[in-house]
Length: 407
Ligand code: PLP
Image (tube, rainbow, N blue to C red; front, side):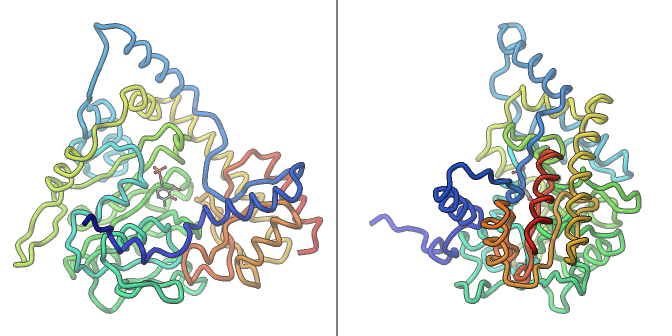
């Protein structure tokens, strides 16, 4: 008898964005002509940078000619891209990461979801609350939790991220084995200072734990005092894996390219306490289950690191950050407490009522889609996330609508 993985039954009823889509669909059906503004899901709206488009075209032409045709590439990514990443994203910031510590992939979602395969089923996992749901759900599927009650799974250690701690949790008193951190944060828009990351790295070293650091929104950091990578912090290479993505950095959400950094010094342990480097394990997993990102897409990602590519992504993301500033300012003027929106494309707004009611109100009274904070965890209750990924005129129109309804 073929049996299902019953851990899937523990997953909570609906994935956040499907529930949002359902409510929007039902509302739209009551008035098809309504113009709905989407400031919910974190998808980009602007076209790919011209440097990436030119690189894509060139690479496609290469594939049309037998002398430059390429079939399967290296599963870990082409050297031209891995070297460009290592130089620009790490070595230039004083982090000694080598090209062969970088694994190119088709998304930070897949990588943050798949990485848990390297670890024992019985490890203790610390999860921020609120959180990007992928970290939790993939561990539920893998059987590392009990069932959910009141929005929380037994077996996980939750790290509340609240206004009180500036949405950056301190390490817990008890020992955990695996810690998920994401800065700049989705959903709160918070950023972590070097000192805060150092405290986590020190904790991980003391407890022989591992940090999974999701830096998908790194490109939005403008404050020169903030670290862009966890490897800017002393000792991080032994205790942290970092995830990056071209999705938000360069508008690749539909094009698909990302990478994971597994330093060769990064360790985990056998049941007997023997230290084992994680690099060969991830290499084995990656090469067994993944066959590489397409050549044109890797050439497009490489173009991000050219002088023109850098100028173009800076302008692109400055545009989104400008939207974030408009949203922040409007919500403040309307009397709301807001976090995020600086060094981050997300604005975290305290609603003064429950998240889904506020979501429904904005949808029905202003035809604006946001994301209810409660969907990201219990500590997200009473907040909504507003995304700055949109065109400026659309954001301005949305803010105008909010001013018109007496919020
Ligand atoms: N990590 C975080 C925190 C995200 O918010 C997202 C997408 O919204 C991802 C990863 C997914 O990135 P990718 O498009 O590379 O799969």
